[in-house]
Length: 91
Picture 1 (tube, one colour):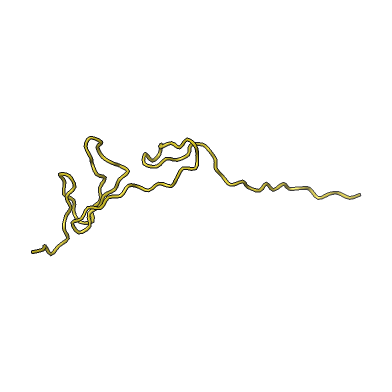
Picture 2 (cartoon, rainbow, N blue to C red):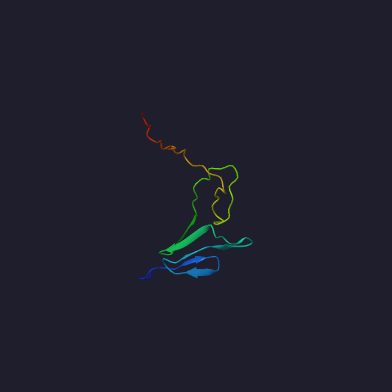
């Protein structure tokens, strides 16, 4: 016999309500901030945070510990330089 309402999820020793999300805690590592889990009708789903690839040789993880970003290196597309010229003065 099935329950009529949405089902909860068990992850480790904790129970989570339907549609609840959390960062899992995995011993001995502790809370996994780069992974998000959520409960959908009694099933636990987890996904690692997706990060865009860093376009530099030495990326750092300062602001976001999950995703590496370039520090101080500019990988900008070259811009056109516009030089204003004064109108020539004819005698």
